[in-house]
Image (cartoon, rainbow, N blue to C red; front, side):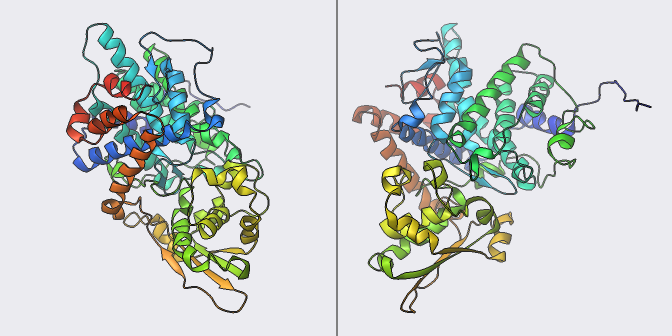
Length: 480
């Protein structure tokens, strides 16, 4: 006997409705969020410019069919590419994520909310160029900043209480959902069409985390977010053309997201959508390192002057850390490529201890050949501090604490160096923002002549001027 399942179309899942209501109706009034979004914008683009120095990244960029130019298409910063918005989103998303140096959000799930800029900037630029071509006003960068705030919020609020990594799914599912929602709004979709678009993102196939973990860690983790945000643009454009949605995509028995991919558990929410995530986002300012290790590297740099001449006499190194770091980046054994190394807390710590620095170049094979690195890795032990794990999840603290102590063969030892909050944390904004702007200036120098650098800085560092700038004119400043 078969069970009878009603074919009456249900009302949309509340999760879909809440996302659609937020992107469609919520007014951004937080000056802190807007200011932080501007910092996020320049930092994210700067990360992308640095990545253009790496052939492993640039080989994936450009049009699908070489030589293709799209009239009034979206331009890719730092390049001469002008592409359709879907592939422009991939290009921008790929370059900004490649070096693992853009912003971070850590909770039950982690991720990089600025990954959504790929879809946001590509669509806003494409729309603006077409509107100018038809005699209409382009979008302003204020629209881009507001879309960034909302994408950050959707991705981050979903991540607070819901761990996708624990069911084997990669966090880029949240990039796809958030990008789909805000891009749908940029395209002028109705609330019902936004719900349809977001439902398509949830029903879509979702990436496994295979490429982030031993023994399969690889470079897909550097372009997965670009893939997700570009897919979001594709789905939003389909919804714009009237493609139907799937209202109970999450809750449908047997066939819905919860039953198929989330062990039957509904999503949990800690707070409503607002501007919390952008205001509290973490910037990677000092090191291109997986964020759970940022404070460990900072500890290592503090210890470098003390131990640099005693490397051969080290007996043991303890890294006292939090549960998420142990689960994600505590690695033993061989590391096969840069993507493997920048997700190994022992490797990053060893580089800091030995060389007193950590740059993207330190993940390359030429650096990894130094035998001292693996020798130190074998002497490291990761230990969980329960308080660190608790403070990591505390919404009032959101710390990412690490501590390092070095023990020598003669019985002596260093002090235990502790860093609870990385320089990119909200609690260290006053210290971090000047460093973030300096990082942006350095990244501009990698790609542009002096006059062009100055034109970008004059606009990008002025909140009011940036908000009022046409999107297409802002992007044109980044064309070489």
